[in-house]
Every structure is written in structure tokens, then in C-alpha cells.
Length: 181
Image (cartoon, rainbow, N blue to C red; front, side, top):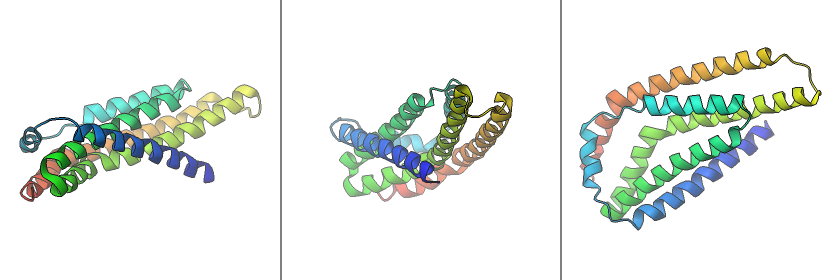
């Protein structure tokens, strides 16, 4: 369990650094946030984006290069969240900060938790494969891959459910908070 705590700490550190970097970059840009607020009248379809990221994580896990792809994915998610929060903060001060945090929670929190779980599964899988390659263990590769694929399929289904809820109810919830700006 301690190993998973180290992975969670690594993920948290990467996301925190990326959010701070995105926030600083967003504050220093002259971008009109009203376009974003107007986009809340449309639906956010995140399923294709999230499904693609899950497939990239799966392929990188099977190719044993998952640390690089996961770090990039967490960095991009953190940068975009920080940038949005920074732009809204610059435009609307403290209310914009709260709105940006709320948008990030509604649109990204569950997905970040899901890919964090996938990252932990991937690290454990890669450790088992390396032990097999070094001759420490003699498990069949198919025995290791089958549960991995089941977990990735389950995460994909949960992501679909989450993105469906965001599609139908996420912006409806966020539109109610636009008035506080």
C-alpha cells in the first residue's frame, strides 16, 4: 500500500505543479472569459477525449513506457485546469477563482481519479512484467494481461457514465453559478 501512496504523491505533485504553471500563464494572458461563459450554454462532450486518453494509457502500459505518457497526460490536464482558473481569476477576481475551481471539479475531478487509478494499476503491471522478464517470477503474460484489460474496460465504462452525466447535467449546474460572477 505504501507504494501506491508514493505513486499518488507523484501524481499529486505533477498535477499541482501543472496547475500552478497554468494559473500563472492564464493570469498573464489577455483573454476574454466571456466566450467561455457563453459556451456553458452548449453541451461538453468529453467522451472521445477521455476514451482516447484511456486507450493511450493502455497502449503505453502494454509497451512498458507508461511513466512518460501518464506524466504528460497529468501535466496537460493540470495545465488546462490552471489556465482556466487563472483566466477566470484575472477577469472576475475571487468569484472567478471559485467558478474556475467549480468548473474543474465538475469536468475533470472524477476523470483524474480514474486515470490515477489506472496509473497505479499500470505501475503494478509493469513491475510484474519486469519480474517475469528478469526471471524472478514465471507468470504467463496472458494471465497478467487479462485482469488489466478487464480493469481498463471497467474504467472506460465508468468514464462513459461520468461523461454522459457531465454532458446532460454538468453545464446545467455550472450555468446556475454564472450569475455569481
